[in-house]
Length: 119
Image 1 (cartoon, rainbow, N blue to C red):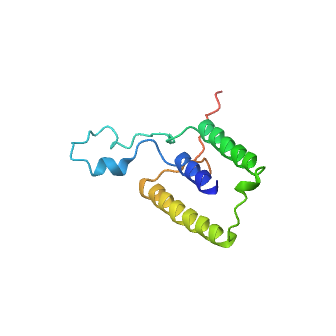
Image 2 (cartoon, rainbow, N blue to C red):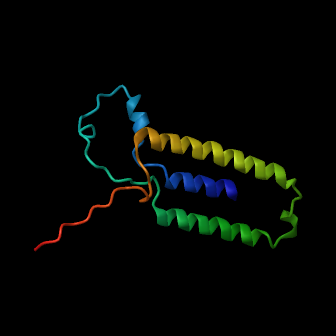
Image 3 (spheres, rainbow, N blue to C red):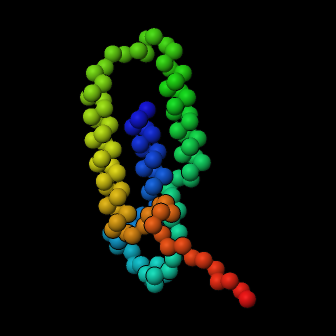
């Protein structure tokens, strides 16, 4: 469950247009995106779809806890360490990508523009 929730979170903070794939393309690029034009962050998956999928996953996992034959004994520290390693590596890669392409999917730290008061 945790790995799937991490995957959904990564889809939410991944932009729709992957520029790093376009850099390796043998096709010529147009200058439309190179002029400094503002392009808003558009996630690969809409937030509502992510929340809906997360709700489904948690609901299914909660429902499956009622069946005793699915109560498999595991050594939980190994699963926790695996989840932490996956989270650190995947989020580290996403953050490096954000820094490389200078985008942030949230509003904190962005300049706020205020309209001038008309007299």
